Image 1 (spheres, rainbow, N blue to C red):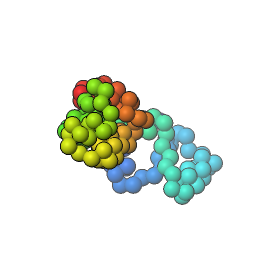
Image 2 (image 1 turned 60 degrees about the horizontal axis):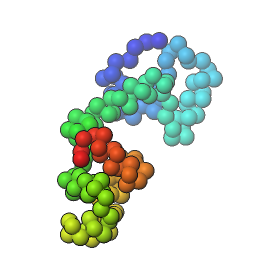
Image 3 (image 1 turned 90 degrees about the horizontal axis):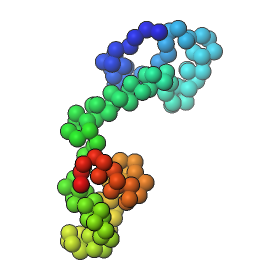
Image 4 (image 1 turned 90 degrees about the vertical axis):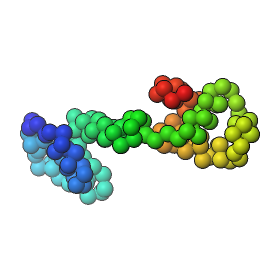
Length: 133
């Protein structure tokens, strides 16, 4: 197996490479399957490259955002602190002078969706683990 340097892998992804195979694993059947996979809009990377590419993207995302977890607004932190203290949505809205809809959708739902979390409890646990609150 040939070594692909991280910068080469990142460049291939940046330029739109949809399929990579190690030369040692190429045979006609595998090559045809990869071409069919790529033709349907999916990608094909060996598992070791998938892991490295995800790591590289995570590093890049961390450098761009400064926190390594994506952007987090002051309002999100404020709301998560209040959720962690046991306040419900109407109480948080009243306390911060926002509508319940803003607290529920623009703040909590946006944070939960952006970080791929399941619910408010998961969001609070995530924020605690990341040192946000």
